[in-house]
View (tube, rainbow, N blue to C red):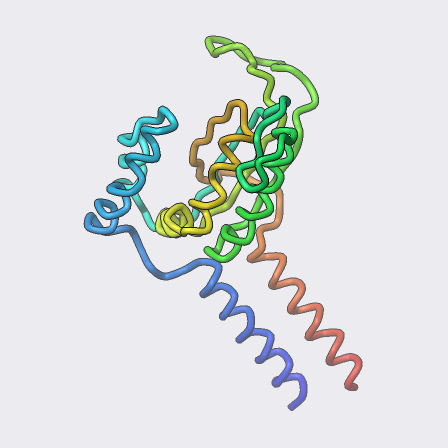
Length: 206
């Protein structure tokens, strides 16, 4: 009886995790996209971005997860902190933005896939602009395009975004979907951890 209870509980916890992690909302509706674009378009214009690109991405929503590839050149100079009015290194504001952004990403079913620093120049490149001096890269998993919109429209994100602008000298991002990966996803990792916990508990109770 104990074994059935343990493994049944582990299975229920995993099912609840998958329900949260995968989501069931489905693709965005035209009305949802229109409402979001009314807010996003002025923001995109303010940073020199073409709102039609994100509109096309939203229109093609398949309801699936995706990974945003981000390349960032941190601001190496001094900037004015919008909170204190003091002069601080640009990287300080970028780090503060990251600390505020990550909880929002997790709250909306996303998480970092990998974040790292650049350790060399372009090794293999042609027909592209010269390396502007990227310092960081990030792979951010989003549960869906709807969750990305929910994050972007969150007042907490809006409040933090000026810190990103001040702390970033240059950046570009584009969405991707995984074709091949040798890294275990949270779906596998959580399943293994729950199985391990259930097995160790069963052994301890025997």
